Image (cartoon, rainbow, N blue to C red):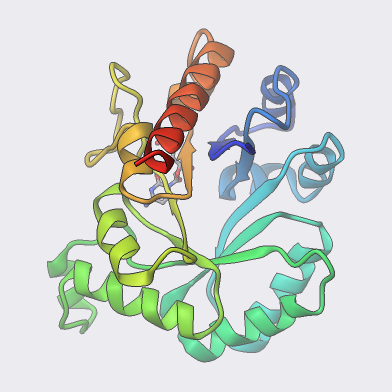
Length: 238
Ligand code: C5P
């Protein structure tokens, strides 16, 4: 069974990231590269990690006019990333352009949407002229992403259960804000354990600091993978 764990590789330098990754095997996890590492180091790190056999989620949240987003998605697909994302609030035309741009690739990367940033409150949405609660806006954007041909969505642990019910089985849900039991929450406020996330219908969990800042990252990875497998097997037996 391929791992449902995506490790957020939030490092400021290539050598720190590589030092960490050199302990890992591609069967342990997939890797997420976000702005910090990509802006500091550039696309070369993506190539290096793919060469080592890792599936890469390029978390750069594209949001621009349809033509530009289509071009940047193509550029990312040429790197052979496994997954990438765009902002659903860029609209259906932008998302469809991104899907079309990727359709030409033999190994088509998965394309998922970012909906309402978890830092946004209902009040902040009102300030932007969005007269919906964050929860309703997330649901609306999920439907729009699906209609535009996207494969799924990044969602908070809090939204996962609702989105799974609303979107059915085939819509990928990828969830950060995961904290194994007994681990410090840090700046994440609404967290779920790996097991709770799987029970809520999440396909992949994103975990960063509980692993990257652990004194025993390999043990932490092994424990999380064991919890994910045990919970998935338990659900399949129901
Ligand atoms: O270290 P931690 O486990 O909190 O890392 C979570 C990762 O997921 C970070 O890379 C963070 O940027 C990302 N993320 C998040 N919350 C969101 C979207 C992305 O924590 N709503």
